Image 1 (tube, rainbow, N blue to C red):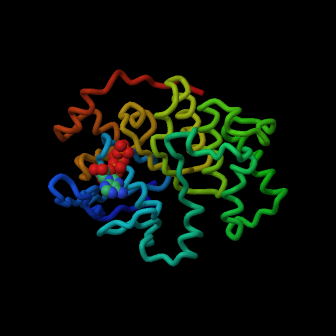
Image 2 (image 1 turned 135 degrees about the vertical axis):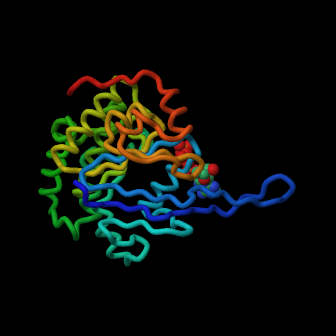
Image 3 (image 1 turned 120 degrees about the horizontal axis):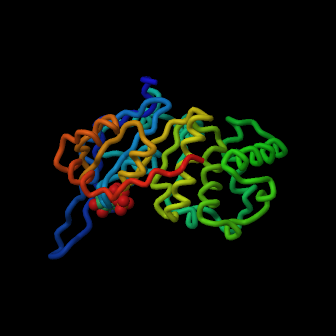
Length: 270
Ligand SMILES: Nc1ncnc2c1ncn2[C@@H]1O[C@H](COP(=O)(O)OP(=O)(O)OP(=O)(O)O)[C@@H](O)[C@H]1O
């Protein structure tokens, strides 16, 4: 379990400044020398408040953003050095689930088309024909707790929790090893959050997935993650085993965050 899957190596990101008052421009240092590594098969949590740089780091991992300096390595390969074709192949192995299942599903597409779309995008890697793609979509729906009767329905016919299940099925469609989970439960009701978290735990065990879990909610991270890093204003202030940080936080920031945590509601077993 110690093999490193994803490594963030001294990554900084500076956004060119906007012109503020008096016509002065200022740059935003969104990430400052961030280093962390995610091991194969683990859940790694990244926790920080709004504006701390979580989205910038996520976008950098997905290569939607180029770091100003530093490297991001997947299985030892520097993502910044890959050709477009290599990156396309690798993208099948790194998938993301977004925060808002309402905004991230195209209302005009059926569940079938939503879930098979990544199989089409990555058809050179996956090699599935039309019938196989449909069969795989049914399997994926079953994995996330939906039935074949849902296949030709549209997003508006589903609840928030069901929509997030569809998003998870879509993320699994290209057969990824690493799922980036960007606050996947924060737009859901508390009872539904618990169900989706339990589903994520089950899927990780069944499929041997690695999770990079972004959140501002320490309670959720404590439930799901093996290790965690705390980010504050673009800087990692503490990282390590979840249990150790919760038992004996080393920094003032970690102590304050843990102290401010509402009582953790542990979701019931599925
Ligand atoms: N495209 C951009 N141009 C300029 N500044 C940006 C840009 N994107 C983000 N920032 C700034 O970078 C900093 C980090 O933002 P980021 O969105 O990464 O934080 P976050 O932790 O994801 O916040 P949230 O939880 O609210 O999404 C903030 O100060 C933000 O205003």
